[in-house]
Length: 240
Image (cartoon, rainbow, N blue to C red; front, side, top):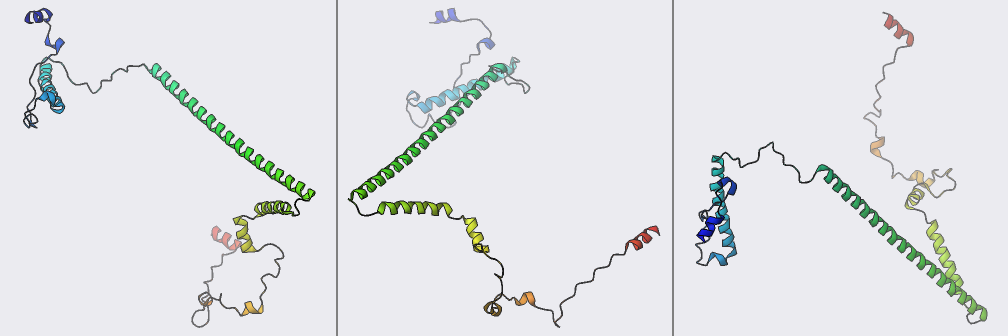
């Protein structure tokens, strides 16, 4: 084996090989001393041994590289070249955007198809309901003509449906109801606020604070505003 090692070994500098043989770093945590089990059968201890050995290699190799004048850190103004060119990344971005747009369009088309199917389904159900009511009405009319039925309930039910639809259509909204409650329901507005004997005797809305006077029975008079001089007097004042 030693002869084969000499055959395959190459006399090249260490910088070209960067090999290092060293022992693991000191076991500060004492993981190997806790139990006498072999490290090979314990995954955690085995990985920790690899980590400690790599730590020792780094601590020995970096000073050796510095002694040979080889930097081990990237300069602050160093910008690595991208693996892909800008043109290639632009094409990739455009392709991704086009794919996203096509997916959005297909999703919208799918939703529209579902809405159309639902609308057709509802329309079909309404038509079926109308046809069923029409058939029932015709059957009831035939029975009445033949004398099998003496009741005209089918006419009343139809009338009730029509009246119910009319009530729903002509029902005023909340805004209209509020205005009707506040201003009335139309009609004559003249003399609607005339006093009656009952309203004249009602003093519940009278406010003492609002109609109170100052001591002496005289309200405080407002200060008279200073009169503005006439046009001629103002012009004379400017000419002086």
